[in-house]
Structure formats: C-alpha cells, structure tokens
Length: 77
Image (cartoon, rainbow, N blue to C red; front, side, top):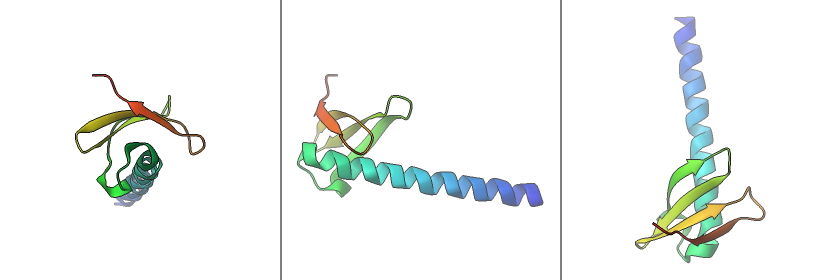
C-alpha cells in the first residue's frame, strides 16, 4: 500500500510540473503568435533541446529557449 501512495505522489508531482511547463510555454509563445497564452496549443515538446510547437488560429510556430531568450518562428511542415 505504501508503494502505491509513493507512485501516486510522484505522478501528481510530474503532472503539476508538466502543467507549469506548458503554461510557461504558452505565455512565452504568446509574444510571437499574437494570441493570448490560453489560445496557444503546445505540442511536440522536446525537453532535451528545449523546443516545442505553439499553434494558434491555425498557424504553427517552432519555438525554442529556456525562459530568456525565447524565440518562435513560423513552422515549416
């Protein structure tokens, strides 16, 4: 029973951290997409290279950076 509790605690911590990272990416991407942070849909997160895609109003951007500076450019499919 104790192991289950530890697993649940770790899962909750990982989920909370993931949400925080995603919201940071939404906020950082907003400057480049012209959309409010909540309108940016984040996908393709690469934590090693610190890149992600932000999509808003049908336009996809490739973003990179860790807080400052962050850069986003229109993505090429």
